[in-house]
Image (cartoon, rainbow, N blue to C red):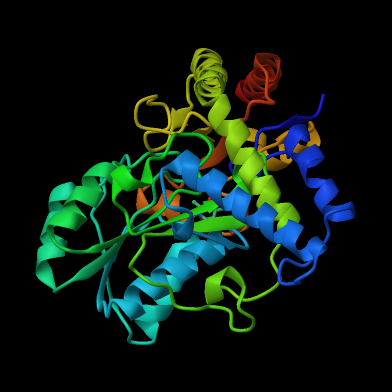
Length: 378
Ligand code: PLP
């Protein structure tokens, strides 16, 4: 049995998405900038995809810009918000994805911005009073807070943050890479200025994502060249990726409640079985709280002596793929776990689930871990 419990790193492409993409590699391969019929067909596919995404997320098509993924969308949003709105103070959390944190740290190092971190508690909950204080402290700010954390699964109250930003005339960016396709987004209602999303987190292709930029805000170009994407993002468009992204989001939205309930039940089974069979496990952040965490992510702290401190390797040897913190930070201490002060004498495993997982896979994994614990205890 080969088990994949690393869906927060990336997901398997949906076969329906794959089938939908194939004609755009073989028959409809035109360059959308070409004036002939092949080009026009490709251009139409892009605009139809943009309309589909805008329709599903309650945005205007003009507010959706295709990017190479979440990282580029985050970078573009932050640079645009800061430079075009003349922002000098940025407020964020210590557990943002590196696509946000490292961009902000680079701008701070270059002297472009002053960076403040919102206080969080031991479970990773944001202190909204502290955010309020920061918003009042240094003039007009840009706030970047992720919707949900990719390592511990915590979901932040972005509706409340958006309201706080609105009251203080601040620019609000939120990284929705882990929630897009898993939760319904109503972008007009949310009122954020920017959001970032990535197709490979919801059974779409890799290397494609989108940036939502509220009409009237404006974008700073990261890539200079041709006039693609209304002169906002140069380079020949990734048509198979774009149509695959729209299809994956359409499929996700059409089954969203059903898949959420199914995946949550898988996660619940894992929580219950782990707690029953391995009493010394702990759950990081709000990971075990169904109301405050992603149904796709469970972050578990195991005793350090488990598998001689190399539980990921042990599971891998047994054909089970999991992550420690996140795939991107493999090999280095997780800044997210450090930010919430996770006991360094524990080893963390992130199990992350998708609609393709089964309860049988959870049972197999937990019995393997229980057997390991018994040998360690003996
Ligand atoms: N933001 C979050 C929260 C993520 O989990 C990831 C990917 O792991 C990214 C951004 C980066 O997205 P991409 O891989 O599409 O560049």
